[in-house]
Structure formats: C-alpha cells, structure tokens
Image 1 (cartoon, rainbow, N blue to C red):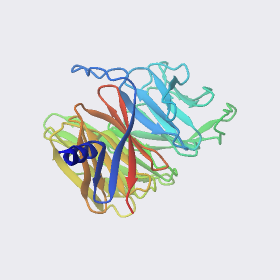
Image 2: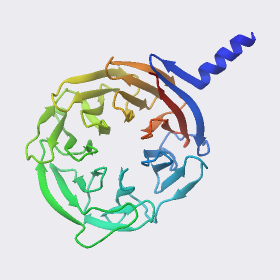
Image 3: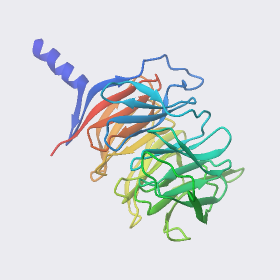
Length: 344
C-alpha cells in the first residue's frame, strides 16, 4: 500500500513520457472561481519570460501588465498604461509593444517604465523583433506595415529619430486572425480571414521574407487559422498556428523554407486551442485548450509525449529561454510554473 501511494504521488507531480518531463514547481497568483460569461481580469492573456528567465511578464484580460519575480514570487505593475489591446515582448531589449487607450502605439521599457510613441492608429496586432529594431503592425484591413526602429539599450529610450515606416505589404484577406515576426526579424507571417454569406469562412496563412514585397508561402487548409496563436519557432525554421473546424480545434506546423507540413492535428474536443508555445530548442510544441488539456508535442515524431488535463481552461503558455520552466496560465487566474526537462 505504501509503495502504491508513493507511485500515485509521483505521477501527480511528474509527467514524463518518451524523452520529456514536466514537474510542478510552484504557483503564481491566488486561485479564483472561474466565470462562465467572461474571463477574470487577472487571467493572463499573454506571457513571456525575460532573457535571463528570472522574470515573467504577463498581460491580463483586464488592464494590467505585470512582472513576476520567479524567485520571490512577487509581482509589480509595469508602467501606468491601461486599456491596451495587445502587447509584444522583446527579450533582447526588455521592451513591450502596446496599444494604449488613446490608440498610441508605444514601446515601453519594462525596467524603467519609459515610453516612446511609435505611431498612432487603431492597429489590431503587432510584434517586435528580439533586438527591438523591427516592428510589424496590422490594422485589420489587408495591410501589414513594416517599421524600422532605432537601436535601443534595454534601460534607455531615445525619442529622436526613433522610427520610420519601411514598407506596407498587401495581403489576400484582412489580417484579423494574427500577426507574427520571427525573433531574428527575417520572416513575417499573417493569419488572414473573412466571412461572407454563401462562402463561409475563408482563411490563409501568408509568410514573407521581410526584404520582399510578395509572400514566399501561402497556406490554405479549409480550416479557420490563427484566431488565438500564430508564432515562429525560436530558430525561425517553422511556423505554428491554431485551427478550428466544425466546432473542434487543432494545430498545424509548417516548415518556413520548404512549406512542408510538420504537424497536423485536428478534431480536439475543445472549441479553441487558445495557447501555443515552442520549446527553446524548437523541437517541441506545447498546446493548451479551453477544455484544460495541456499537451506537449514532439515535432519530429508528430505525436504528443505529455498530456495533462486541468480542471479549467488554459489561456496562455510560455517556455523560459533557459529551458527550465513552462508557465501555464489557467482560467482560475493562477499561473502554474512547471519544471521542464528534455531527457537526453
């Protein structure tokens, strides 16, 4: 009996299958009762670890953008910004790209709270490159703007000659399903979609090299692509997106260079897969859905090697750059920090 209890306890604390393992480390935030009509303000919509994996920056469903200290487990609010539409985090410069309540598109220093206005307008989405020198923005119509930013240090912001718009890319459909930029600033991907009576939903993924005017790849699968997630792998060799068809969700991964499909999974019971995150080495993809299913996919094998189900939905995921942690944001407003270990 004692051995059985030890075995059961180990399986609760450690998920380990076929070369990868997750172990519960600690929890951030206080558990709240999830609401059925809308997500709680403290539920993390987006998350990113800083370069040294010691801080976790989160954007809540409400107004707050906060920074968690991983060691002390204390949090602080970043800046005095409210009613943002989205944010993108640059690990190299420790900066956020945000849309404020006044529709100013702003680059915010996480360390100092200083702000620099990039442009103004009702942009739907945007991303920063890791070195903070390139930004892409979409307005919800069939355009993607590419901006060159002046080189900034992580602690200072210079407003003189800060940015200039390099080009505007034309897209097939409105860019309403997602926009992303590879860490090195080489590739742009847009998840585009439209709906018309008699035609239904039409969606595609377009991928550009930032130096070109025309896309190098267009992916059209007959599914809705990228309502919640569109992201490049850390090494910029793959792009991943969530999918949905007939009220069931899924995920897809394509190679950027060849267009070859690396992973195609559909028919999940959850309506949406709300969270995706590549491992730092680009060989695993974590997914989280509205039914609380956390799955880690071995991309080379095309199968999930870890599958755990939480009692409430998963809204966001983030791997730490050092490969030590996977953060899981739940609908009960907690963030579960798991030890991630890739077995050799």
